[in-house]
Length: 440
Image (cartoon, rainbow, N blue to C red; front, side, top):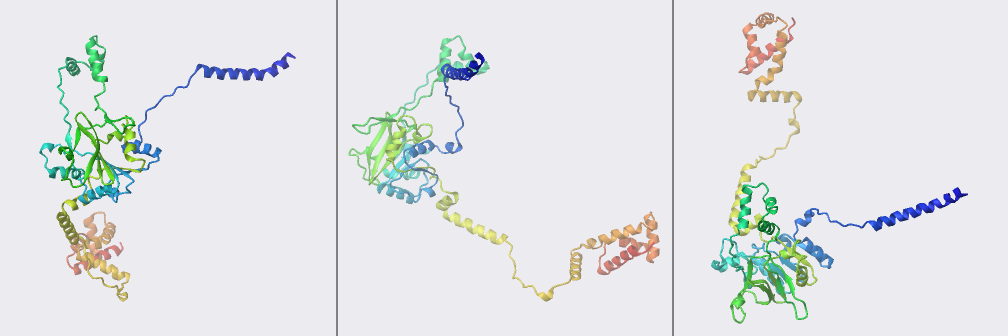
């Protein structure tokens, strides 16, 4: 009776034990989430605006990456915002006019300021230098200057000097420095190794009275200047395009962001576009600024319209040289390519049989001094038959010459020398054939 009772209770005891084990597992453990760093995909590393494009896609804004002037022109609808980096020095005058007319009709253009090359000082640059450097922004009165950041004097730091000298006599300078009994040395090492480098101060953007101030951070050593700021009334009648500065943002050293109104459109000039890169999009109000400038419309990120294809660049810069090279190429091809004479139709009655082809090939070899090829096989067969007369060659020649009733020297010449005339050739073939066929 007790055994039957235990047998019925055993499944319940087993289920209770299993439930207790599961409850104890969840009570005594907790889930741990960890992150594993992996290399980004190549499509992300090649596209600095990959994060920005994905974020725009989540907002319902289509975006594209344009990598050449050929893909940029013809321009899209004016609802599309164009974000163009500083690699645009080779824009042609027609392309510049097309872009500015597109803005005048209502387009939105975001442009990265293009500084002068390091070989040209801004104070010594002429209008031609500015125009050649940036044909898109110079007609609008925009120039880019070095930021007047005061040079900070580097004070002598004995700790820094000591660390610079440590590798001379210490295998592991950092370990020696951090484990030193000198507290000042340890603090200096920690400061030099662990402190992050200084970053530029963010810019404050005042959007509206009821809107909160926004901040963006631009990594640039340049400032933007507009020609209208030289005039007291803020007008620049000498500009090629009628633009007006509608907004700007600056820091202690100068303007870093300038907005220009042109017709029904707007041009936003920034000293740096890396604020929308994969690494910096999430900081400050960078994403908000991109959304504010694009106004929920499609976006094109344009890169490298500076350098057209080499053939096109040569044609634009030196058309005469290009024409001369094409002419020289045509003359060289005309000289090198083999030219055929007039074709002659084949005649059916002129066909030859096989013996005629053999005769023609033999005649060709005779004319090209290839007599040896005509008698090589026959000569080898005659040499093999000569051995049958005697194992010594001189005696074999004498016996064979006696058998054929010819002088031994004549037989030796047939086996060794080359004929000079047709008669000699015919006589040689006949003699070798006789030696091959004679019985011994």
